[in-house]
Length: 98
Image (cartoon, rainbow, N blue to C red; front, side, top):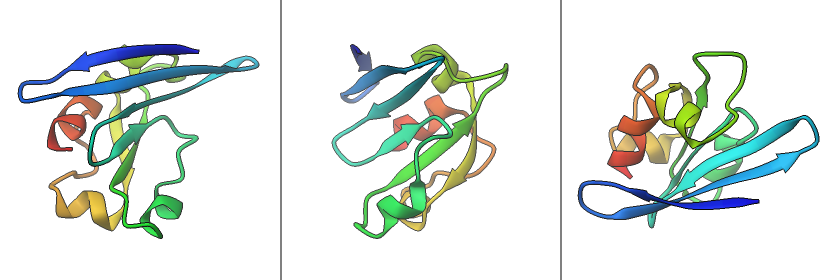
């Protein structure tokens, strides 16, 4: 598992890359929510009122934090929408809103 500090303008976030066989589970967590790869179930997290969004990669998959930040938001739950996250923005833009 790889754990990184992701610097943001006003705070820091935590980035995680967890190998799962041939793929990685990749996500960035702030103090108020999460942006992750396609394996993240944003609607399940909505049941807990936890803001969440997932990205689709520019390439074949989200292999690392850079892929996640450059990817495009493909899904966001209502709690994430309330914070301004929208489908089509980059992962980096979404993380900044959290």
